[in-house]
Amino acid sequence: MLKLYLTPGTCSQASHIALEEAGAVYEAESIDFSRQQQRSPDFMRINPKGRVPALVTNRGVITESPAILAHIGQNFPDTPIAVPEDPFEFARIQSFNAYLCSTVHVAHAHKRRGSRWADDPAVIEAMTLKVASNMSDCFELIETTMLSGPWVMGEAYSIADPYLFTFTSWLEGDGVDPRRFPKVYEHSQRMAERPAVKKVLSVAVG
Image 1: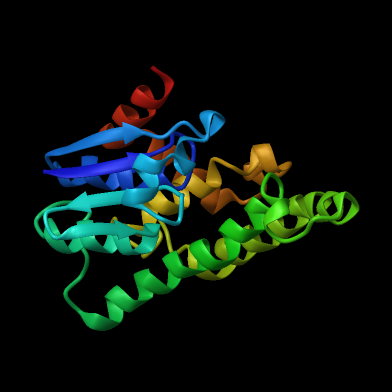
Image 2 (image 1 turned 45 degrees about the horizontal axis):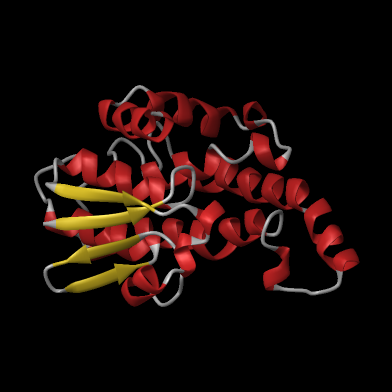
């Protein structure tokens, strides 16, 4: 059975939604950042990076959201989360998810994780002050050049959708009004109505 290590509200939420969309049999275990559980010896044996998500499979552990999402999509072909067989279409999805992972997530992380890049409090504060404008720039690009609608890739739902939904949920906390980006905002509202999303969010709240 699959086991997903996650923390509610983080990027691991996307993998959690994907497992629900796939109808997978899995176990979810929450890692409490406030108690530094991500640095505990038990979890570090699972993921030496000390981060979520981590997906334990019968062949080993997979880390990094784009990889986990792709793995789920490839292993549940007859579900809403299935990845396309066409290599180019799959690459388009991976391109979008890679942008979220490598650029948008880093822009967001400067708010609470500035110590990853600097030790000087003044530098960390300067990075924090740039988060809103950097996230705005990222989502402007998504709004105008990447989000086809009604789903990220167009008419077909994909593993890119729960990933974007998760990042959109961070905007207000980063000082950005998501309504500035009508297509992105409508996407988040559409996602919120999906049963899999409702179930994951109810578990996070409960």
